[in-house]
Image 1 (cartoon, rainbow, N blue to C red):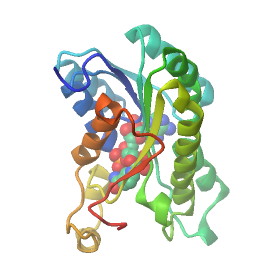
Image 2: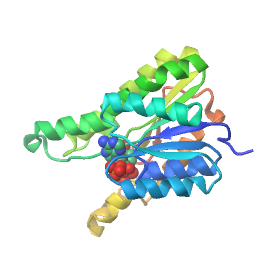
Image 3: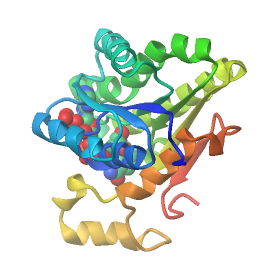
Image 4: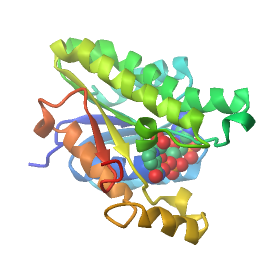
Length: 248
Ligand code: NAP
């Protein structure tokens, strides 16, 4: 039996990068997968077919993670389309970097809304169902930057630190109903986003990592498979780093 057989997961922001890798690993491990995208419509539609090839139920939804009402509608649609839901992965995220002196109010609000408020939106939308069924695993993708801070990313670091506070609080509030909530903190993961960067800059990042390489989206996805599965049934309120010992 596959490790996620019988589970239905919702992964936000799965059209590319880490979210896409999580959705694919989940399907490979037997979960039915609902996922969202926003601007990458073609990639989102293509992913739905790739997931179905694993023989599981899969459906993509175009939904803005920062929109509270949209999250309520999304979760209701997923539960109706799939007949239930027991895993939520909050992965959708953006960056709008600048030094604090040059950061605009809009850059601050956009990053907080897409990265942090989005987690509140979906957690709120699934909470009643997860509590009632006395089972659920919530996985929030934070970042090492949320633990350590990063010059030029005050908005992003604040959003990711906020996710850690939210994660620990939800774990405390919902633990008695067997609902778990954990955060995954990736370090430097090589995605499409990093492919377009100056190779010298990317190499200097790799050199600073004790394991001397960037991580792959699949390596974050494997951790998310574990946290979604019953193998992690007594793990809640934790922040698991997937960073090649960067923050050790
Ligand atoms: P990515 O390749 O840029 O993918 C981001 C995903 O989020 C896309 O699927 C995008 O969908 C979606 N998204 C963005 N805004 C959205 C919105 N308002 N509503 C719904 N979906 C939205 O980024 P990534 O590198 O895979 O990062 C994924 C997560 O890991 C993020 O939370 C990020 O902060 C975190 N993380 C990444 C790294 C890294 O090194 N890559 C390190 C630490 C943490 P559309 O394109 O369809 O809009």
